[in-house]
Structure formats: structure tokens, C-alpha cells
Image 1 (cartoon, rainbow, N blue to C red):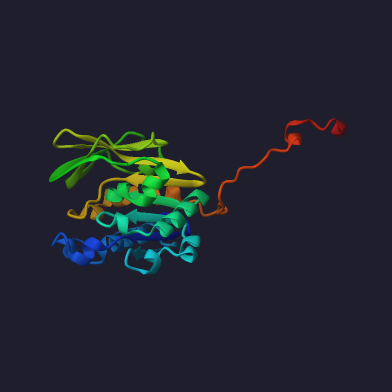
Image 2: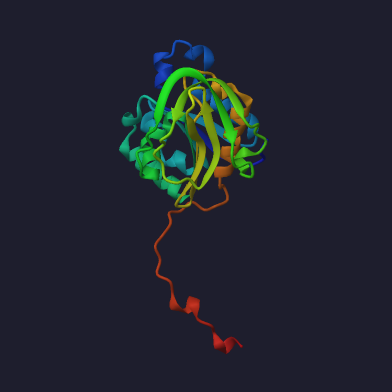
Length: 253
């Protein structure tokens, strides 16, 4: 468990839940994917406030006031990336640059906020044959990998494969391999402005991946790592340096 007192917001578009697609969705995630993630994080962060929001809410549940009290935002999206308001994306983007942590999950790689922050298409190869995925730790010294088994064995999962069109990550923590022979950079970090970003790919809606304890541990580690609750929230600025920063005051000798 982590003793930080954080504002943690789990965002999910909620379209699969509303349409019950797949038909096992209600059985796997009776409270939605966002509910499952929030319940897991509450057990890791008992001192924190963990809440949820969905696309259908006013301002997608991502108002200025709510983001101002959010230390970490988790983002799961799939079918409705284009339905996310550009104004809300700009708002979230500003908060990330100002220091809010962001954890992007699975098909959130194509979310407007992720592509805006990374500046690339974030496209990849995929195939959904329900194959086994092995998630290998390749940077065990990173805090996100703390206490995580290697490999994490995911019995069934959608295959994500290279080329993953992202910039060079700050940290490559996990690489996944699949039965078809593909590999994928499944756990990576970035910094943008004053904010930290962690992307983790396992978590397709057709499989109960977010119920796996080792996956839950990775996400809790990711939330803990991107969170910077003591840092003041402000955008980076371009400033002119005073010349006297680089001179010595001889009179003080």
C-alpha cells in the first residue's frame, strides 16, 4: 500500500459498458472498467480519494474544477476517441504540462490527449485472437516495476505489435511477447512539461485483465510514480535570465 494522499480520477469512455459489448462485459466488469480500476486503486491508496468519470457526463466529467484537484488521471478509451471534446483535451493537456500525472491504458494510445502530448500518430499493429501475452520487465530498477513478477502471464489478450509510432520513451520498462511472435513496448514513460506520463498496454475489454493482481500492482506503481502532489501546479514559462545570475559579487569578499 501507498500512504500518499492523492486525488485519483479514473476516466473511461464507458461505451462498451453502455452497449454491453462484448456480451460478457457486465459479468467481467459489473461496475465498468473504470469501477474495477478504481476499486483496485482504493486498496493500494487507502488515504486517497479515488473517483471515476465517463464520456457521457457533462464536460466528460473533466471540468476545470475537478482537474485542479486531480493528482493523477487514468485514461481508458477505445471506440469513441473522436467524441471527446477538443476543449476538454486542451484542458487536460494544460494540466499535464502543469504537473498532473497521466496513466494511459490499452487502446488509449489513440486518444486525442495521448497523440497531442506525444506529437505522433501512436499507431500500431494489432490482432485479436485471444492469445497469451507475456509482459517482460526490462528495467527492474524503475519504481513502476517494483514488486512485479517477470513475466506477467496474461492468458488471453488482444495482440499489440510493433511498429508502435511513439517518440523515444524516457523509460522502457516492459516489453510484451505474443504467441504469434510479435513483440511490443508495452510499458513506457514520458515527461511533458512538468507532468509525468505512463502508458501500459494490457487491458482489452474482452478479457478480465484488470482483475489480475500483477497488472493491478503495475497500475498502482504507475499512479504512485506519476503523482507529484507536493509540486505547485503551473505551466512552464519562457523567462529571460538576468545577467547578474552569472556574475560574481566581488564586494561580498
